[in-house]
Image (cartoon, rainbow, N blue to C red; front, top):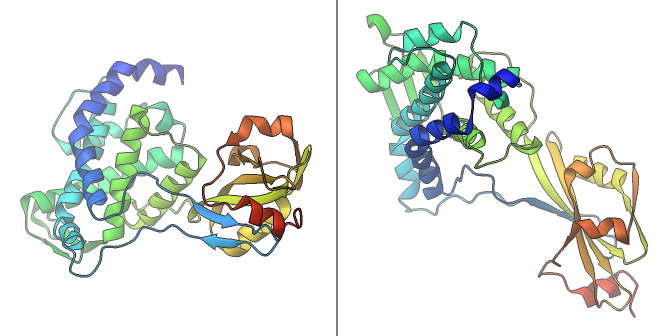
Length: 332
């Protein structure tokens, strides 16, 4: 990846940022307006009660607008704009990559698609993920004719936030391609995310990568490549109440079983928020062990106070420590 690093410098990345800034902002703003924010926000919670009762799962899903609100109608009417704007980001990303590889800048899509079939080096974030590289190129090739129809012809319809588009290139009307409201959001999500990751404004961790893989699977009918096989990803914050001791033991195997039971058919990543409660309920400590420290941990994890100190966080405001101590049998 040394060659990739030499092609994609902070200066060239700044050029990408400048060229795509308006379109990325527009898509983020559109989905912000309708309460479907593209940036990852919020973490679902699996909370174990202090008395040891089975955990309760709370899902913080995005709420839709109330009846008579104008915002859903805004997105429904704007479906063609969302599609064209998302494709423009993809086009600018592809052209930027080609220019960094010494190709001449051109507005002709046929030439850019042809150039992509020659040896081309993408930024390391994309180049090291063959599934991402292949699907970006395939999306570009298959969406370009549909974009042409929406811009230059009228062989499309928009209803309820979705599009039905027929390729009309070279005067031949092709079959109808359906692009749902969810597809449009996935397109916006993947392309805005990629630009933000490349700029360094967002970070692509394991959960974000799984989310991107899932989005491409849901867009398989558009890029026409095989499914990656990514289950719907989920991120959980698990809350545990434990007696405050010199060594705190965690039953990781139990947590994993409960997570699997609560979120069947999903690819779940979780962290653990520990509430260490003294016998009098005063002076409790809170710690968050991040998911990457739990991936390959022992079924029974033991952490000393000194080891947990690095993970210290403020106590959650909604915790009644005295009541928790009583439920745990620590306080009469």
